[in-house]
Length: 370
Ligand SMILES: [Zn+2]
Image: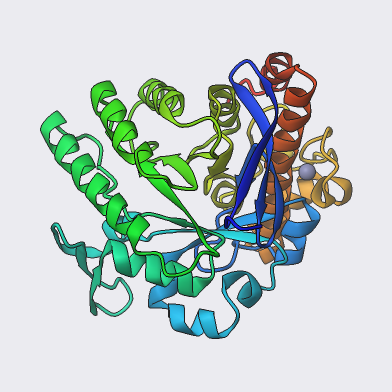
């Protein structure tokens, strides 16, 4: 394989498509959901557990890993996948989002983002070039170009200024690669303005990235605006490259985005909600802390085949959660990630059999409170 990744669309059904993403660390069936392993760990799950659930691609965070333990150390340890002991592929985000959401920003200018580490206050300059260098050291199969994630709400003028900077940073990111073994994706911004989304998509797709992402969504805007901007962004992205919707979302958001033609997703919801005692099930969200589950001998989700649902009752899971047992986080996370993996497998099969709309309405019919 000469290119760092190869993407083949194997079936399409209305706007939705199924495919295969080939990387140097194996092949991923799409549409795919990436569990979030910010600090080279998906919270509460061992890498072999992710593998058993069918996950072949996980997301890690360049900003966090660059600060601790350091990108050079991860490189010495064979890259982030080997460091973790994960047999699949990895995608790293550039760190721009975290630099803005976590750190004390000193300034954003043409050169990059100047900020102070959220760990020890050390001053750091993240540039498009250094973000690529860090991600190459981390050994990511897929790197993300540094962008300015436009905050919400933003004035039209501010959002335009931001996407113009993102476009210039995209050019620099693309030019900064030193190795041909890492793919790089560009990111479309534009906040909730249709004209700016179009402008950003035109700018970013003029650069021959290996894939394209819609960013700056799920940052506080109304759900309808998120879906409208995601659909618009997807329609502007080339059909022969993977399309990645960043940071979205609930099971119903994922089905909507698959129908728009997105192939890749990540979100903290299944893992974070699990640690807060919330499960996604075939019948909608279940809050395990509720008293109604105190004497419930049923599994979390009677339609689920995961280890948690095969082993534990709701009553036991509620007891674990209320007792602060680590097993509560593990059991609920395993169920939620199993649920998301099953949703993606179901979507892949439905698209292959030209049955996606019926599949989406059948599974979402149960999620009354999603
Ligand atoms: Zn389950």
